[in-house]
Length: 472
Image (tube, rainbow, N blue to C red; front, side, top):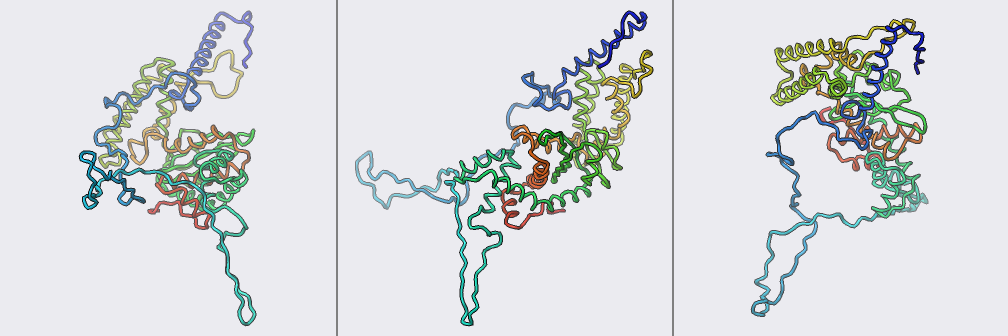
C-alpha cells in the first residue's frame, strides 16, 4: 500500500498533483468493480446475480427459433423395428352385434413406433476351460482369454462407463459409483472407479502422444491456459486445439517453463492463436491474437471512459469479421488487398484518435526515485497492443485459415473448469495428469464424431483406437 505524504509539507502544485493522482486511482478502482464477463476475460460464473451481459452480435432481425432452411432433428422412424406388437380389433361389431369374420381382418401397414431403452441390468459371463490327458500321460488345458485373470472382475464395458462418466461427463468418483448402481444394478466401489481411471490413463498415453506429434504439423493451432487446484496448491491446465484434435497438459507453472516442457510450441512452424499472453511471443512462429478479448476490452474502455473511438473500433472489427466469413463462404483464402488496406488504414486512424485521448503517463516529479515501468491506463495499454501487434490482430482478414477469435481453445478448456466446479480440486498431481491424458483422447474423438464408450471399451480390451483423423 502506498504511504500517503503529509499534506502540510506539500506545495500547492504538489497538492494539485496528488488530487489528480487520487482521482485517477479512484476511477481505476471503480472501473475494476464494473468488470464482468462482457467487458473482460472474467468467466460468466463470476458475474453473480447481475444484469445479463450485453451481446456484441446486434439485432439480426430474424424471428426466434429455427430459421428457413434449417434441417432440424425430428424424431424419425426406423426401417426395421426390434419388436412388432399387434393390437387386435374387437371381435363383435358394435353396430349390429354380428361376429367379425377372421378373413376380413387385416393389419394396417402404417404403425406408431415407440423408441425406448431396454431394461438395464448387467450380464455375467463365466469362463471355464477344458482339460484333457493324453494317452501318453501329458495333461492339456484350455487357456482363459487375455485379461481374464481374476475369479471375479469387471469387464471392459463397465470400466469404460466409469471412465466416461468421470473424465468426460465430469461426475465425481463417488457419484459415478452411485450412477452405476442406479443405472445397471452394479455395486462398484470408488476404488474400482479410480483404478479404471488410472488404467485408462496408462493405456491411452501413447495415443495422446500421437495427438501431440500431430499438432506440430498443423497449419493453425489454438492455445490457452487456466488455473486449477491440486489440493491446496495452484496448478495450470494448458490446452492446444484444432478442429479435430484436442490436447491437455498439467504443470505447476503457467509460463515458458511449462510451454517448453510440453514440447508443442518449441519447433512449431504454423500459426499460434492465443490471447496475447507474453510467454507465447517467445516462440518463433506466426501468431494471431484473439479478437473476442479485444472486443470485451474495448467494451470496458467504452463503458469506463465514454470515448467514441472504442465503439468505432468495435464496429470495425465486427464488420471485418462478417466480411471475412462471407469471403470464406465464397471460397476465398483472404480479403482482397484493397480491403486489407482499408481496414489497416481505418484501424490506424482510430488508434491515433485513442492515443490523443489516452496519452502516455510520465513519471511523477515527486516519485523520481521509484524504479520500473510507469503504470499506464488500461486504454493506453490496449491501444499499444493494437498498434504494435497489428499483423497479429488482423491476421484473420489476410489468412482465412485463422479465425477471428480463440474460441476453439476456450471451449476446450471450459469443460475442465466445469469439472473443478462440480467435483472440486484434484487430490493429486497424478490425478490431474490422468485427467489430461484421458480428456485429450476423448475430446479428440468427440470432435471427429466417434463413439467414446466403444473406444474406451476397446482400449480396456487391449486395442487402442488411433485418435488421428483418417486423413492424417
